[in-house]
Amino acid sequence: MATSENESKDTIIVYQERLDALDATLASKMDRWSVPALRAAVGAVFIWFGALKVLGVSPAGDLVASTVYILPPEFFVPVLGVWEVVIGICLLYPPLTRVGLLLLALQLPGTFLPMVLLPEVVYTTLPYGLTVEGQYIVKNLVIIAGALVLGSTVRDEPASV
Image 1 (cartoon, rainbow, N blue to C red):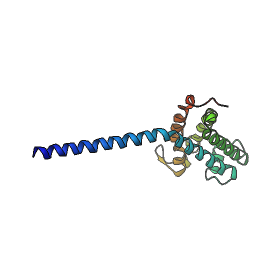
Image 2 (cartoon, rainbow, N blue to C red):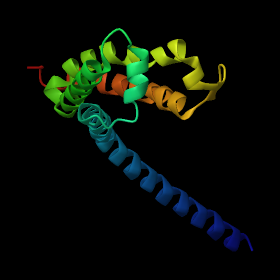
Image 3 (cartoon, rainbow, N blue to C red):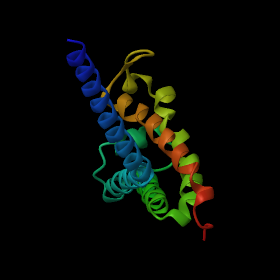
């Protein structure tokens, strides 16, 4: 009986070691690919969303136009779109990460303006119930976190051009 119990403990230890090895392998792969994947994802989102603004087909175009009412939307929305495409390109090309992050730091605070200027568009119940537009805005918190991660890598990259 004691032998069977010892064999069960040995089997458990073997499985724990295998799981630990698998965990170490997966963590290593994630460490290797997480920043490049984040760079590609954030860059693609900015290029995609910016291009939609340039082409005049962005679902956020009206929200942007309603928020920045001091400039004509037919001028401001495409300019913002170009700005976002440039951010995306800079984030995709590591030597330009610092430039992209600077442009992003200048652009992102403006994305939260509708929460103050257009609460009726952003909230179903102030301050926590969000409309689709509100959710679109709040997701920028994830982009900010991603930008912080990318910013933490700039000292590891070749100098910016």
